[in-house]
Structures are given as C-alpha cells and as structure tokens.
Image 1 (spheres, helix red, strand yellow):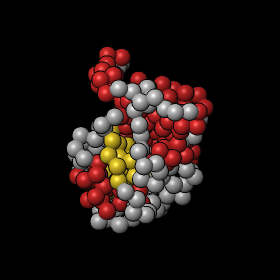
Image 2 (image 1 turned 120 degrees about the vertical axis):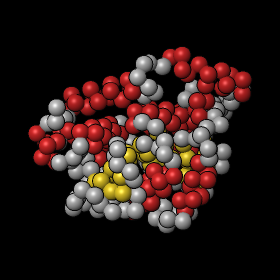
Image 3 (image 1 turned 45 degrees about the vertical axis):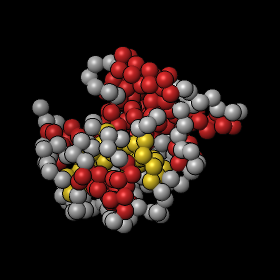
Image 4 (image 1 turned 180 degrees about the vertical axis):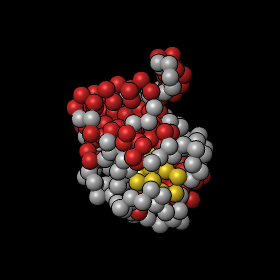
Length: 254
C-alpha cells in the first residue's frame, strides 16, 4: 500500500521503491566514507519508464539525499519531476550514455575515494594480489583520462573501453565506474572493488605483493557462487546495510 508521502509525491509505486533504494544507497556510501562532498553520482533507472533515471540533486551532500529530493531526468537531460535542483553535468554525461546503450545497466556509480583513485592512477591498475582483486581479474576495462567527463562525444570511448560483459571501468587518473543489473549487485560489486583497492594500496606500502597464479584465480572466481545467499548477488548485503542505516538515521525515507 502506498505511503502518505508516496501519494503526495505523485509517482508510481515502482518509482517510489526505486527512490527509496537509491536514497538508501547514497546514505550507506556516505556512512562508509565513500562520498566526496557534493560531487560524484549514483543513478538508477526508473522502472517501466523508457529512458528515465534518478540522480542525486547537485549541491547536496550525500547525507542529505532523500527519496523525494532525487532528480528524475531522461537520457537527453530533461528534468521530468519538476525538481528545482540542478544535476551534475559530469554525472549526467557519463550515466546517460551507459543507460542509453546498455539495457542491462540498471544502477551505476562513480566515485573518487582515495584508494580507488590511487589504483586508477597506476600503470598496472588493479592486480590479482588479494582475495577481492582476484574476483575482478579479466573483468575490468580501462579508459584514459580526458579531463572532466562533460563532453558527450567521450561517451562512445567510455562504452568501447568498458567492453562486452564487463561491469567495471577504471577511469585512469580519475576513479572507477561500476554498473549493475540491480542496485544491490552494483553496491556489492563496488564494496568488493573498494576493498580490493584498499588492500592493494596497503600491500604496496608493506612490501612486495604476491601475484596469485591464473589457475587459482579461475577456481576462486568459479567458487564465488557456492557461497552466495539466495535472492541475487548483493541483495542480502545491501539489506543488512539498510538495517544498520535505519538504526542511525531514517530520514532518507522522506
């Protein structure tokens, strides 16, 4: 049954559910220290609406994002919900291109966390030297730095460098982009990538990294599904963090 706020907001039940999920994601990222002032962006497609997606209101901290203040735009940049907030042009340019051309990309995140950026700034990128990074071996694309992503023509190169079947694009000298078929999938892929980068940076400071053999990496990737919980990749993890978020602050539901 629709809540009073949902009725007042005048959106479909499916859109309100997407808004709640995305607002929670922003707050969880902020709680985990993965936000960057008013910058960076997470987007989600609006269910049952061709070409529409939700993005954070530019100018607000991620700790201020709520279900109702997310901005609904189309892939041409037109606001669809009458929001008075602007959207970050860099966020729109990047996300709209992926949403337009990848029908499976439901949720997309781009961040500037120090550890993920540090790995993006190295020649070799992410290396198979820890438990988490081995999951990503052979599954990451790399895109050379072209400055702030505000020019539409860069989108073609972003898509080409992502490549078929990949869900992570490391923007060199910049930061990662992670795409998911669901928001929980995107969240947990990012969680694993963040961990992989944190450990790689610390390992480099501690000594010489040990590279995992290819046959062990292959087995490691195959065995991932054997420890997965029901409901889809990342679902249980995301729900657990939502429970923790609700104990701290429930204002994201507004």
